[in-house]
Image (tube, rainbow, N blue to C red; front, side, top):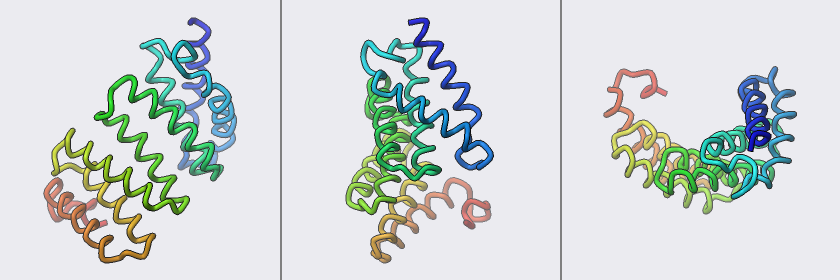
Amino acid sequence: LGQDREVLAALKDKMAEFDHDKPATYFVGRQFARHVRAAAPHMQPGGLGQDRETQPDAANVCLQAGLFFERVACSFSEALVLFRKGLEIHIKLHGEDHPEVAMANNNIANVYRTQGKYVDALGLFKKICDTKIKLHGLVNEDVAGTYTNMANVYASQGNFEEAEKMYQQGLEIMVKVHGPEHPDVAT
């Protein structure tokens, strides 16, 4: 148990150095992601990160490494393995209707969209939207963002009429949340 905590602590420290939006951190990200990918199969009941205290860390290092594989390495199959492992751990911790579960599902849906698996992406984004509405109510910035994600999928499919409806729903929510003059509404 002590060694598991040390491994997760080291991975967490490396994770803190990596930012998928900053190319200068990609080398650290590559090292970090490889270590997490090697540890991921052991992140199961009775394995690495499965005592109640370290489970959130195990889930989050999987999700962060998944972002490296998705956004930097463009290795979507690797990203999906890690996103699914992070999702599995968060579901065990929190149940299906939790913001961390919605975030992990969002990562998976984005990979599906990138891969052109639009039906899978839309199904997951709709599930995420339902969860966020249940958690936060309809008038919430996260719900608006999910409508935008669905609109992006429809636009990728060439279904611009449905995309426009989704963009409009997201915009209407953002206006209710922030008012019409807010910079997030203008974009």
